[in-house]
Length: 272
Ligand SMILES: O=c1ccn([C@@H]2O[C@H](COP(=O)(O)O)[C@@H](O)[C@H]2O)c(=O)[nH]1
Image 1 (cartoon, rainbow, N blue to C red):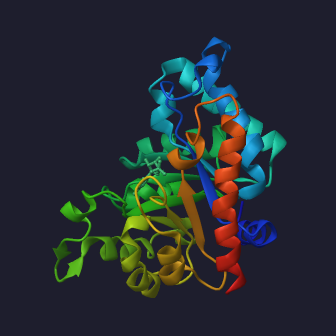
Image 2 (spheres, rainbow, N blue to C red):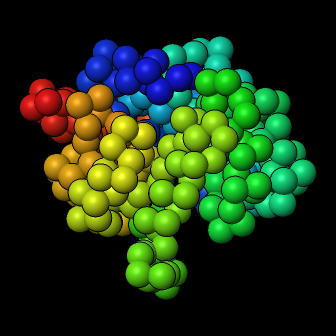
């Protein structure tokens, strides 16, 4: 999907919500464990209940890999279900990959071609030749970690390197890479006060913003400093939505949680 098409979906649904599918087998309702594929059944129920209120889903690949072959099969079934039932939805493989060029090429093939995700998260630490293989696909994006939501972001990302914070160097340097129009960036909602300066460097690019909800980030602050005239935001919430209830109506409750966020987003969009 192109950024323009994603923007159209955002205005149509009055939402820039991304629902995170971080499915921990120990946290899903126990009655699902007797199903052939509990992870997929959980995802299917969550997707059916929340799709009206969001424009994107973000399976975090760690939660699938942790279940071996069965986890990977659940991931494949989930992305195929989204492609067939809800083709208008934007999909993000939160895999945080990046390696020497020929290895990155394999990661890019797996997520952007074979599984057909719209985008994949990528770590910038290994530089240009580790990221460019992800940028070669038409209407697919690499979402580069810029300023992450965790406390450890202050260990390296905000440290000064030759008079400038490292995350700013990541933003500026990545703009010079081949096919950089296919870049989006991760900025944590817990770092909303940094968004003003980030927008001076990348005024147009989409930002994936995790950290609203369970990590304490505030939607209002993200919008105040990070929203552009074309919105330019995908705000993710995972645990607060998908684990809102452990009862048999977990999906309905997840839908209600997603709707609350969607309503707040509609309010923010009305002020554009
Ligand atoms: O800086 C980052 C980058 C990625 N994440 C991921 O987003 C979700 C957040 O989940 P919540 O339950 O809404 O806190 C999760 O998959 C993280 O791995 C992030 O939080 N921060």
